Length: 165
Image 1 (cartoon, rainbow, N blue to C red):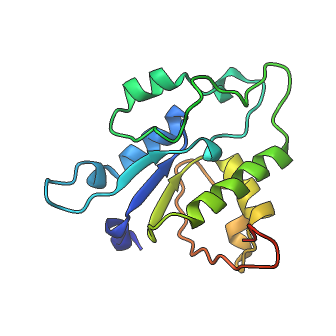
Image 2: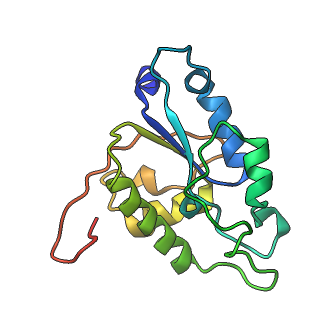
Image 3: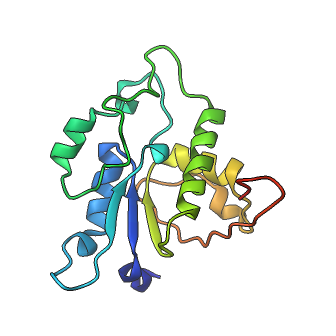
């Protein structure tokens, strides 16, 4: 499966440093693609950010700081300068995290790319794979380890309601 990584068209990253750095290390061959060869686009997306807790480690840095540290990533889809989801007094509910994961998949479904990597966080992935998607393999719904990669094929099935996945 590692051979398919060269076919990636898009790498979507959480705006948190730890996920962004993981993406840049894991897909360095695509960031550093020689001129005239196919590299992947790197795009930041706020809806795949970590589930927020009261811990300051779950507070996204300002957009200005993120853009300065990671100038090779397209952050144009994130417009809020500060992290509006973080609270010093309350954790983000699992429901809100699941809603963000659902909205992310609706966005992803509208994209033209077919080979996509998402560099994000275990809690967000746990919400995605246990509340948003239906998985044929139960192992896909287990907790992700740090730096773990799993290959999945998403099938979007249109239902009666708008936005069904």
